Length: 139
View 1 (cartoon, rainbow, N blue to C red):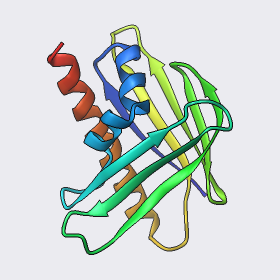
View 2: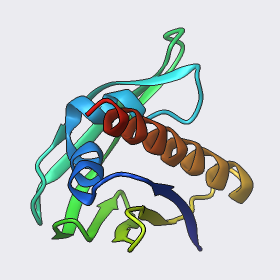
View 3: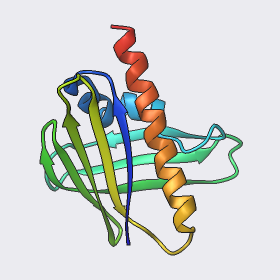
């Protein structure tokens, strides 16, 4: 089943795209809750390129690598990727009001409930929007 999360960011598309695809930014926003963080990230942003984010509980009790392969890249518009046997697409849609809509569609998995997956991915995207907003205000 495909799930969808979405946010809107009042910032230029170039800044939104860069924050989504730059390891130094990813480690700042990529967490679903305050007790988790991303300790490292790598990005080879090209079709066939690999990405990885090391996500860990801040207390050190657990962690995992969220990793995959980019399937399609359309700069400032689309990032499609595979991770394990699942897929995801991230669409970037600049609006006339200077607000970029970022929508992520992803395959659900069987370990966690649909509600948990939806909430976790939405929380990460909300952190992303706050990060980009802070960057934009600071420029």
